[in-house]
Amino acid sequence: MGNSWIASPDAGAVKKPKASSPGDELIFYLSKFITLTPAETKGILDQMQVRTFKKGHILLREGQMVNLSHFILKGCIRQYYIVDGEEKNTHFYTEGEPLTPYQTTHNKQSSKFYLACVEDCILTISTPEQDAKLMAMFPHFDTICLTATEEELGKSHEQLASYIIKTPEDRYLDLLKTRPDLFDRVPLYQLASYLGIKPESLSRIRKRIMSK
Amino acid sequence: MGNSWIASPDAGAVKKPKASSPGDELIFYLSKFITLTPAETKGILDQMQVRTFKKGHILLREGQMVNLSHFILKGCIRQYYIVDGEEKNTHFYTEGEPLTPYQTTHNKQSSKFYLACVEDCILTISTPEQDAKLMAMFPHFDTICLTATEEELGKSHEQLASYIIKTPEDRYLDLLKTRPDLFDRVPLYQLASYLGIKPESLSRIRKRIMSK
DNA sequence: GGCACTTCTTAACCAACGTCAATGAACCGG
DNA sequence: CCGGTTCATTGACGTTGGTTAAGAAGTGCC
Image 1 (cartoon, rainbow over the protein chains, first blue to last red):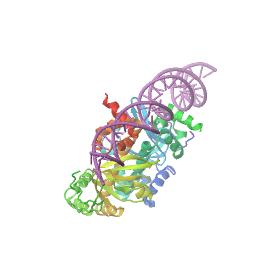
Image 2: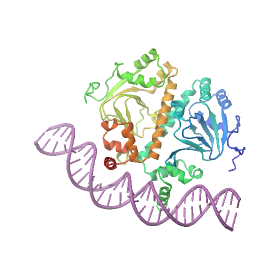
Image 3: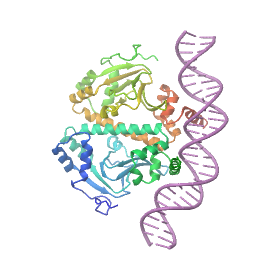
């Protein structure tokens, strides 16, 4: 609603050449790990391909072997599996997060999950070839990627631990604290499956908490 | 039992200079990602520090800021949190797996979990400085690490998905299939917490399955 | 406005896990 | 061999989540 970046009414395909602000998000992310020279910053922004996608657009389907990497400049993307005809959400990615299909890229396996836009999205897009080009341009770029990936792995381990250790109610309260924005962007029934429960149970948990 | 590698009776501290077979495990692991030249193989093995640890030895405690990396040549290590005085196991690492304390290393945070030897273990040990030295010796070593870390991240995402999607019974059956060795090495009550349930529930699940 | 669709909530009933307590098997040390 | 410890199992009972069905609130379209 009222998002000035979404100019075109058709789904996707609007190329955004190094516009002023969207690239900043990516540069900010990278500068968490390394200090970029102006030349490097320019090189990255010149390389950068940006596209918009409409709410509901499916970036990746089960069985596909797409291996594009994305970085979210604006919007929200959910990862989900379909089990017995039911969507099970396992991740919500938002602004400033990288999105790499590891299984597909390295093991030449087809994807087991879906990726879909929860809202209108602005994403960078890069092929493995483009990534390799950037690596070649900037010698220490793979060190950045290693650090970033290790950070993601640490987060993933912590999240896994929270599923083993905590109750769904605990996880709901955690999510309220750590990612309150999701409650304005994602319907509750999708967050329910992310918490590992059914929408009816989430309702009961919310009711239970209210009366405390 | 009858493990000829465990020669010394005291906990840890037995340095094993590039002995014949234990290093092979590490070289095999690395060769999954890259073809090593004989010189590289020798360099890695020369750098390699190996120590044995006795069953029950705690490698890392909650609150510590140790940042040693390990690679398991022999044995089994469990990662666990202590919540309300109870141990909650979140990972079991076995032969041929790397063990890096990401949070501690990068974010200078103290560890939230413990690492303990389930059995007598033979591990490589390396400091961040030694890792950096290897990186400097072999230009593409960080690319290997990136690939390995991305693979770990993919696995972690899949495991997280299994907790969101599956029932404890499903996870028990999965574990029987994918890591049957754990049932000979790890007591059931520890596997129970790994499956996200209490030992009593695991008993009931096993009984339920028996009668089918 | 009226209708369809989506999303969230509620209720009743059942299945599964947690809790508490007790039992028994296997193992270890003296 | 005995006594203590660890580990797995079982039963009774309470709590929580799943299932099914229904309804209410909000949204968009004709």
